[in-house]
Amino acid sequence: MKRSKSLKLALMSASVLTVAACDNPEEVAIFESLEQCINQAGFEREYCEASMQTAQKEHIRVAPKYVTVEDCEADFGAEKCETAPQTTQNGGSVFMPLMMGYMMGSMLANNSRVATQPLYRSKDNPANFRTGDNRKVAGKTGISKVPASVTKPASTKTRTIRRNGFGATASRSAGRTRSSGG
Image (tube, helix red, strand yellow):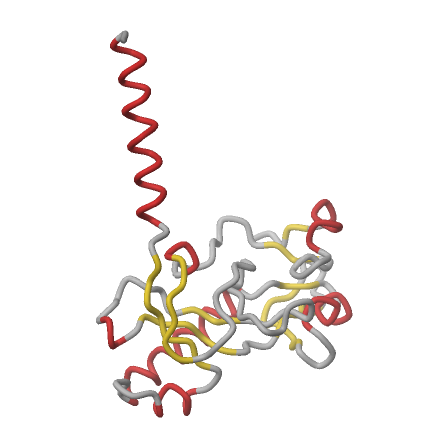
């Protein structure tokens, strides 16, 4: 076999192994409230409080943002949205879903590689928690194993204000997203 072909084959094999290794399940803790975390065996109040505060700060940064409350409620349900601290370029209100829970590294696994982040429940699939960038996490609270890819913080490369687009409407409205200038 020629040298270039064997090199390409070796690089492709290494890439496949790298991708597979990156999505090994990670042990995480998922909670809907601070009390749930505190009552979970092996978790200390201070760790739970710090993680909840981190998730609340991240919520403002990574939650999907919408131009109208109706657009937000179309994806998350009636009375499941709030006014975001940001405004549109014209000074109008921006809306985001309520934080329905948070995910953090499991103290039991001594896992500090997992980013603490807010979780949401879409109207189309309320049984499962989702990240701010719409990655499915899990359907239950407590200790869970999830793909490593969902434990990374939501991307902030392009912040957008959506016109629908989190739940089932995402594929129908992908071309209607507006930039918020951030």
